Structures are given as C-alpha cells and as structure tokens.
Amino acid sequence: TNKERNKDSGDGTVTIIGGGFGGGPSQMPHCAPTYAAVLALSIVTGIGLADNSSGKVRNDESEISTNKINQNNRNPYREAGELALNLLSEKRLPLYAFFLSLRERQGTHDDEEDERIAFRMHHDGEIDVRASYCILAPCKLLGLIDETAPTSSEKKINHAKGDTSSIISSNPLLAPSIAKHISACQTHEGGFGAEPHNEAHGGYTFCALASLRILNAVEQIDVDNLRGWLARRQMGYEGGFCGRTNKLVDGCYSFWQGGAMAVLDEWDRGATEMKGGGSEMIEGEREKKEEEYEEELDEEEEWERSEISFDEIMLQRYILLCAQDVNGGLRDKPSKPRDFYHTCYNLSGLSVAQHSSRLWLADDIANESGDDSCLNRIFGDVTVNIVGRTDPVLNIRVERVEVMLSQHF
Image (cartoon, rainbow, N blue to C red; front, side, top):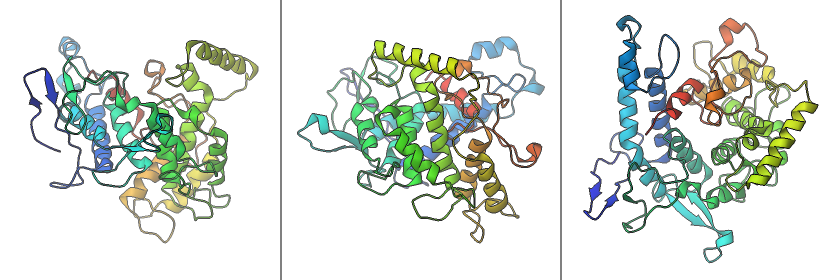
C-alpha cells in the first residue's frame, strides 16, 4: 500500500493519500488483490477476536479486562487478530480514497438520467463489474458503506483527484448511478456480462448480483430472467455448473453460479423487503411490502427456509467425486490439475450447497445464532463431508463476518 502520510493543510482540510494492495511487494495497487487482502485480514481478525469459551465476539477491551479470562483459555490467535484489525483500521481511509479514485463515468455525460458510474480494476485498467464487487465487498466489511462519509471527525476529506475543497455530504459509493451501471450489464439471457452488451458469464454474474445485494438494489434487475439463466447452468448429467451457455462444467462455478443462486434465494425470501428494501423505497411502499410478505408466509405454512433453487446433492456429488483430487486439493474437472483457485471456489460452492439459504447475516446480525442447525441435504457421510458455512455475498465464514460487522471503526 501507499505509505505516504496524510496531509493536513491547516485549514481543516485533510488530503487522504489513497492506496490499495498489490499482488506482491512493489506491485501496483489493484482491486483484486485488495479484495483478497481485506478478506484474508478479516478472516484473521475473526479468528483472533473470537472468544474460545463462548464463541462470541469480543470487541470491548474493558469487558475483556473485567472478565479476567483464564490464560489457558485465551485465544492463541488473539495477537494475530489484533494486528490484522489494526492494519485494516490503519488502511481503511486510504482504501476508501483509492476506491473512489477508480470511478469512471459511463453513458451520456450531458444527460444526468443516463449517467452511470463504473470502476476500473486499477488506474488506467479495464472497467468491468468485477471492480464493483471487489470494491463494495471490502467496503461492507470495513463499514464504508454508509449514508455519510466514513470519517471520525467533521473534517473535509479529499476523495477526488486533486480536489481539496469539496465537503463530503453523502457517501459516493451509494450513488444510484453505481447500481444503474451494474444493472445495465444484464443481458437478454438473464445473466451479467463484464460490461453492457457483453455475453453473460458466471463470474461476472455473481459479482454483479452480490454488488447489488450489498447496495440493496436487486429489485432493479430482471430477477426472473436471472433465475432462469442460473438454473440452466447446472449440468443435468454432471451435476456441476458451467460458466456460459453451451460451455463445459467447471468446478469453480460451483460458487460463482451456486453462490449467486443462494444470494438470489435469500433476497427473494423477503430479506430486502423486511429490512427496508432499496434506498429509494418510501415508507408507505415498505409497509405494504412487509404486509404482503407476512400474508404470504401465513398462506404457506409448509414453507421451508432451507430450500435452495438448485440440486444441492448433485452439486456436492460433482465436487466430492469429480472435482476432488485424490492427493488433495480440488480442480476444474477430471484430467485437469488441482490449484488453489479451484480449491477455494469448489469448497465455497460445497458450503453453499450444504447450508441453508437464510437471511443474509449482514441484514440482521442480532437474529443470527451462527449455528448450523438448519442444513440442506448432505451428500455422503455428514461427519466427514460437512464444511463451515460461508457468507454467500462476501464468501468468508459467517462467524468472521459477524466479528467484522461488530467493529466500531
């Protein structure tokens, strides 16, 4: 990351020197390794700040000292968790400045109604919906998706290139034009391409849908068309997913497609409406949505929250029997070599297939117990094959998300 100090001009204006993470030392900052770095540090934070004895989050230092935790029961990863959290806290505002510097206006510049905001993957880099997701997901974990600018003081922050005069009155990451651009990437098939008029692709579809879920803007797209496209990507014989129409099965799409279906399912079950819906929903519409949702539940007493809109047994079978390498690791398909990328997303897809599609943790953290009492059907021996529950939007364990969302940055 950029190590230059933030500059105070003396007139109450602070210039934040932005900087993301690169793939290695001395490499340029890039959205993809920045996303990976923030999630990795969030995992370490989540493990380190969890209470071994109760499994609860500990973020109150006074409470910790009062409880006088027995040294034998002390979390051995506590120090690592604190270091990770301190690093995230230190880099939080520089990351925010870096993300805002990647914005690009799209559409007709002289027509405000047609204006859309996209993001570049790095400075002078490509523009696509991966960048939107790789920016919004870390911002969600770092508490940067808020109605106001993420400052702890009333000072001004320079978030634009060379502009030190503007006062932030609202968070630019919540601009409606961002969701508008993402929605414009949906194709006639129902999935999403990298940018408008591109072919629908599983990876870009997940990035687009997860981004809209973070922004509470899923209602802006053709949900039925998207659901149909996702359903048709599961292969009838193999059980795994393919990434595009008329393509072969690939283990990584176990999460890109399966995870997208899980995100869509939990949204469709009423999570968005019950928590207020999109940012533009007026109070009367919100109350009407809640009443309709409650009436629907009364009519469907047999409604099961653990259902998911693909064949979870078939997907688990493909991952465990076809994508798994006998020497360890997972792969695209038989005959392909194992690698870390396919290992990660096969396991993420396995988690989605095994665990119920419940309301997104980030929407109602207080009502989530974090247990695994509600599962989908499990392929094979449950005691051997079960994996932890990943958050379908952010793709780290829900326990780690809980810790991050409880922090007061």
